Image (cartoon, rainbow, N blue to C red; front, side, top):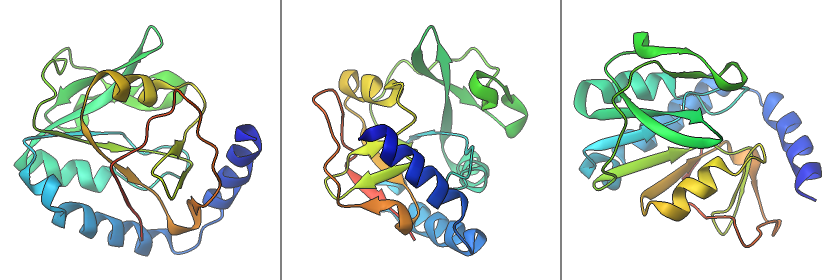
Length: 172
C-alpha cells in the first residue's frame, strides 16, 4: 500500500501547478509560526524532487537562527550546522547535504521541518521508505513540522508501528 501511495503522490506532487505561489504561502506560515519563532535551532531539509521549497526558508533562518541540515551517514540521518548555502554539496541521492563537520548534539530548543511525499490527517508522513526521519524522531524528542502541498494531504491510514508522526503540518 505504501509503495502505491508513494508512486501516486510523487506524480501528483510533480504535477502541482502554481508552486511558486504555494511555496510563498508555506514560507509565510512557517516564519510566522510561534514554535518556530521561539526555537533557537532549525533542523531543515534541503528541498529535492518537487518537495516544498526550503531554500528560501534556509536563507531566512540563516539570518536569525542556528540552521542545521541533514546528512545520511551509515544509513542514519545526522544534522550539521551550516552558516551559508555554500556549506552544501551534493550527497546521498544527489541531495544537497552539509559539508561541515559541526554536528548537532543537543536537540533541545530545536524545531525539525520534515519533508514528506504526503501526510495523513494524524500527522504521519510517507517518505521515500528508508525510515531515516522515523528513526531520528523516535530517538530525539524534537517538535516537528511537516511541510507539504495541500494536494498531498490525505486521509489514508498507512502508518505502521515504527512510523512517527509530526506534531504539526503546514501546507498552502
